[in-house]
Length: 493
Image (cartoon, rainbow, N blue to C red):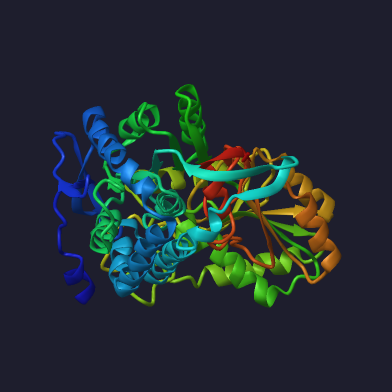
C-alpha cells in the first residue's frame, strides 16, 4: 500500500527548460507518460515543434560566447557543485526512474551513480582539455602548438532505457569544454530529466548553458537539422541511429550515434558455472533485457551444454518479477504495452521457427499489478543463427541458447553478426580469453563479466551497425568530439 501511495502523484505536463527558465510548451500535441507497472499515467509530455526547438537553440547560442570565455577551472566548479547536489538527491532521482521506466530500484540507483561519475570525470576538464606543443617544432626559433577550442551548440537525443545516465555521457563534457547544450529526453520518460534539471538549476549554471526540450521523433529531426546546432549525440535503435547520422551529415554536423545490439555470451567448458550463471542472468534479464549491453545469446562451447542449460533455467525461474519500488523485486516490467506485445510476438516467432521454449515468460502476472507490462524471463534452446530470435534485437527478457564446437566457431558467430556492441566470454583459461578479446569484432568485451559497461573514464564503444561515427560517448572521446584543434605556429623577432 505504501508503494501505491508513493506513486499516486501526477507530475502534470512537464515543462521545457530554456535559457535558464522553466517554460510551458505551446504545443497542443501531448502524450501521456505511463507508469509501466501500473498502466497508469504519471505525467504528460508535449511534442515540441520546430519553433520551440529554434527557441532552445537561440538560447544556447546566446549563452555560448560568455560561457566559452569562462576559464575551464571555473566551469569545473559548476560540475563539483552539481555532483554534491546530485549526491544529496540520489534516492529521489532513482525512485522517479523506477516510476516512469519500470526498472527495479537497485538498478535505478546504479544508473544514478553512473550519471554522477560522468560529472566527476568532466570536472577534470583542466587536464582533459589540454593541448600539446613543441618548442622549435617547425624550425629554429619557431614554436608550434595545438590547442583545443569549443565549437558552439550541441544536442543529445536520448533513449528511454536509461533516462538519467545517457544524457550524462555527453553534456557534462560538452559544457565543461565551453560549449552550450540541449537535452531531448525520450518522450516516454521525461520526468527524470525534469527532476535532474531542477538540480542543474540549483547548481547555478548560467542561463542558456544547459537546456532541455521535450518531444518525439519530429523534435529530434528538428534538432539534427537546425543550422545553429553544431553536433548531435544519439542513443537508440540502429535504424534511427543510421537516420540521425545521415541527417546530421547532410547538414554538415558532427554526429555520434549509438545503435542497437545482439550481444553473445560465450561459455567455455572450463567456465566456473557457479559464478557464471548469476552473472549471465543479470546480463540477460537485468532491466528486463532493455539495454544495449544485455546478453541476448548464450553460446556453450563443447561439453557442458546440458548442465549450463539446466542451471540457467532453474535460476531464471526463481527471478522475482514485480514493481520496482518493492525492494524484493529482481526484474520489473518492460516500458510499454506495445513493447510487451512486440516481445511476445518474438516468442511466437521462435516457436514457429522450431526453437524450444524451456522457460515461458508470457503468462507472467504480478499480484496487485495485473495491468502492468510484465514479461517473465524466457529461455529458448534449439536456436539456429537464421532465426529471427537469433538475429533481431528483441530488447526484452528473451534468452537464446546455442551450441558451438570450438572457440573459433563462437567467435565466427559474433563476427558474422551485423551488430558489434559487446560480447563476453566465461573461462578460466588466459589463452582463450586473450584470443577472444583480440578477435571478437565488438566495441566492448567482457571476460567473466556479462555486462561490460565502461566506467566514465573509458569510452562507451561500439562497432558495425551498433555505432555510427568515430568518437564515442564519455571521457576523452567526448573531449575530442566537443572540441576542435587549432594549430598555432609562432615566431618572435
